[in-house]
Image 1: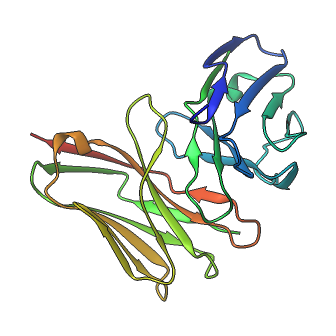
Image 2 (image 1 turned 30 degrees about the vertical axis):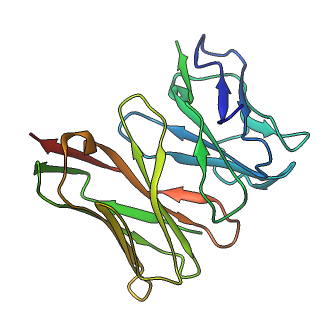
Length: 113
Length: 112
């Protein structure tokens, strides 16, 4: 597609469940970012991929969060044993490389009830 | 690593006035500073960016200035219009890992 695509757009899950959030970056973009945005806050860095490898995962809040990008394109953010505090909009962005414009997806709104 | 601070958190201006949003960063090696605009319920979109080899960049009513010595950069919007109302985020690139770090955002309200 022409832009970054995220699915699902909305996800409601029960506390303790496992969720997967998907990001399809712009074709050819080697850099891929995951951010979490709570209401009224800026995007909070979670993890950054350069190609298939996680160049920086220092923003993942704990070991319940994990992300993969096995073929250097689509990425999946995985959250185990979800907690109500995980509720937020999860944004994915991609760019041609570092220091270039990052394009955002529309986000996945995760609600943990 | 990079830390970006942004202020003010909210800004209200009269239509036609100018608006200025300021950010400071911590990583002296950072060399790329984008600004994003996010309208309610929508994704952040780049409006302007600046690299460390220039001190100012302008695009119509929007300009960004960079002071590398002081480690701060600012967004200037002139002749503000109601459609400029949104949340604006500055960002810096962490030079060690190249991750993009955002400020906390400024909610701009342009009063008609």
